[in-house]
Length: 395
Image (tube, rainbow, N blue to C red; front, side):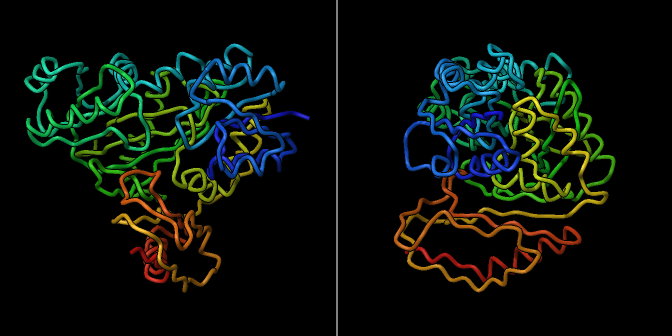
């Protein structure tokens, strides 16, 4: 029986663990100690820092695993590439993983391969920031190269904001540099993709709903996107170019995009499935369990066999994070939602009495809702109904 080591033990990884168990694999969850739900679900617990490539490699050897996988978080991607390459396991290469973990390397790879991306500069100090401000056009966006979940990302509409936010970024990053790039004001969207043995099995562009918190933070997704076939095809083509530029293979892919005047720009990508309901977005759309594809590929089984069982048509769906616009304590939860076939998921991460933060990134989410239906407009209407019927009172 094959053993899969899952990097991360939080709620999104629970779905991956359950999918792997459903396929008959032994599951070992790898994470630092903590009250994480994955430990209760997996067959074995491995306590290690998944941000450490050496620690993950040692754990994989010690526990005799047949594959390593992660989803929905960047923390373990670099270690996954490092360990898979050294052990000859399926997965992205160490070089590709390093590129995914550093937005500066990534942007250079895009530029070298002719991928459409915003103009950018590397910034290390006030002098290099001043030079970048002279060379780039406002508005700009400052980014930590090593953080995830929209942390360390700030839109700057004037020079003063750029100088102030540069200090904020450098206080958050573990690196001694960040990047600044031109902020393309267009329509934000994304894409999920899967590449296996050098072939991209699919590219699924998805619409993004965003919440402004320093920068635009994705809080919901929907498929199909509200765009022309020309834009869809342009997104698919640019994603395939970007995957090749980074050298991604044998992994799920999460991509952030901007569309402006019919042209697609790649903001960034990484070699794992997206977070905040995106594996479910893919699964519902194609009528399959996307987590199963990730798990099967990781242990050397054929994910194409799972993808071949997808539905002939596509299922529209939409998701939304539940969030609070203020910090406080959960006073009560009012739930009047009728659970019919359109509600694919409605789950909470908080209970009355819990302290919550004002929403700034995905870590502050209170729960999630996913709906499905005959078309995109139906899904939007159903989301609006649920938001009016499911109320989290914060005081």
